Image (tube, rainbow, N blue to C red; front, top):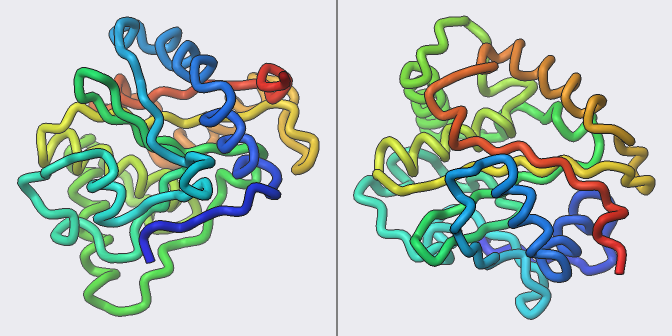
Length: 225
């Protein structure tokens, strides 16, 4: 299943991203353009998670379909099913696509290793992660299918879209502040310290795709009516 309907009665980042996309899309757009000046004139339409579609999140071929993309290199040649489940997806009027990962507390950064169980899937994942590391000129021996796997596989998909298919894409990481339901960070500095630890460990503090990765910090209080 690659279209996953979500409950409206959730909490943490799942609830926050639903609220942000459906009630405060301009807030998100402004946060993105403030961090990435080259996008200042872009009008972003958010395609998921929409209330009218049961807050569905998308992955595999369905995220490609939702964004209206026709990649020259098929996704299944790069990544097996099930692939990343995107917290939000958007596209600008000029055709730029936005892949979103949202977090509401620091433990969400540390994720389980790849859950692929068959050797074909595992080998494809490892090969694609290795190709991404090679492109980014990361020469360490850190296992990208390990503790920060969610971050690395999202970065790999940015590589897939931009470098293997020539699609103008951005990865947007949303870090929510003051999410009390999951004891989330209260300051940008708390998030930045945790992100620095992760990036230093992976060896990606600066890389070829850095300018296409946008980190935004949104206080949940900004989303209140």
